[in-house]
Amino acid sequence: MPVSADQYRQIGRACAGAVSVITVLDQASSAVVALTVSSLVTLSFDPPLVMFAIQKNASSFPSIIASKTFGVSVLGHSQMEAAQRFAARDPHKTAGVQFDRGQVLNVPLVPDSLARIECLTQQIVTSGDHSIIVGQVESAVTQDGQPLLYFARQYGSFRPL
Image 1 (cartoon, rainbow, N blue to C red):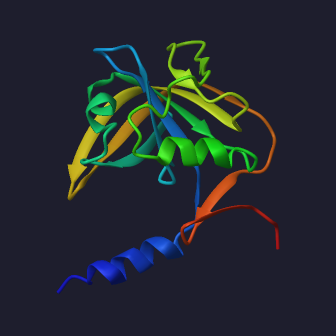
Image 2: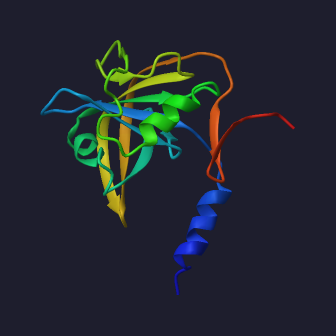
């Protein structure tokens, strides 16, 4: 028998994750669509692949699924405001926001992020109420700094033991 919904939520609260913003250009409107995730995973070295999960009922789901490219911005500890903004269910959450553009794929990227990654969508796997998006990394720029983390429904940062 599967665990209860409440037990499952407790599992999610026990997992810490780095906070990233996934961005695409909507194919119909050319507007930037953004989604905050804590599920980014480096998947493969050869070829270089990353993956993230998105709920099928997310407002950004149709645009992200339809896009052939996407950007990933791994946020630094001082970028909590961006994480909160792009986690909101507001359809106008990207209005007035200035994004950098990728050098290879022209995807939108959050300025000053620890990593700015440009990906080609390689595979979409649907499982349960989420889809897993796998992207091939075509370009990546990184900088030193502390990551923004998400744990137990709170933002924080890393401190070595």
